Image (cartoon, rainbow, N blue to C red):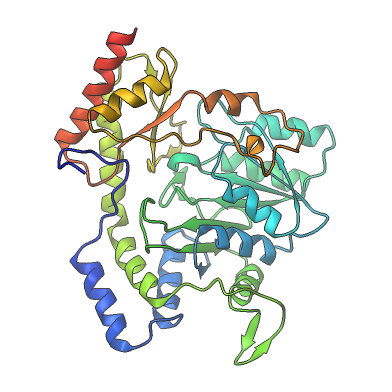
Length: 367
């Protein structure tokens, strides 16, 4: 790859992470242990939640959280179709039925109005998974009100939203449980890893047991579980990354603000952040309303600027779920228009200018 290539993601790892890994290796305790417990406490505190349970990745976090909440066969879970497929897969792993609610066309998150209409029509809903897509929180205030009124469990899929907030309250502290991913492209990483945060002690206890073979102590196992544990090496990386997360977030937000300024007069629609919500820009996603998305993508690729389409096909259109009867025209339309531009902390000011200028110039020519 050429030196002037601008990537869509770039994990920020340095000497501090290497030193922490070396200390864990020196200790000899490289599997689950005190380092993981420390990371759990620190991450839960960061999210202003009472408990944290580390897992092997974001998908296992979702699976374990649903299990800990008692979601299983006979239950119905609604979520957005405009997400990575892991959100729906976790429901299937739990043995429950998944359903999809269309999205808000401006935020790309689950539409509370559409959900409320379904609830008022009498649809049975046992749980809702709200995805904070691209780093923008879903409308948790409204969703929490609906959860209280219609008595369903509320789970946050915060895989892309480390540090995002609603009215100053960080995601990970709403509802019954929240789940994070630490995949290398995320706002912070452990190489691979996940985390459940919750204010419910019973959920934390059951999740911690489930991810460790249902273990109560020693070789006593109270239930059938999985090996979904996080390693101490991953937790060591995560503890350093968590310390650096505020600087990463500031850089993402600054890069996003600069891109928005460059694109102010272009025909692409820049990201919308509703009042009271803090966007952490896992992705900076524009809507190609006045130009052809794939043509812009090819143009940027030729200029050495990587982009991403998240997601080219809604979950209900995937072969694994296309048997379901789903009406989600907004999500289907969004899938044809969205394009994510580089926004990560590894970008220089010159990189951001190059991205913004390239999009604006193409958009001007393509008008």
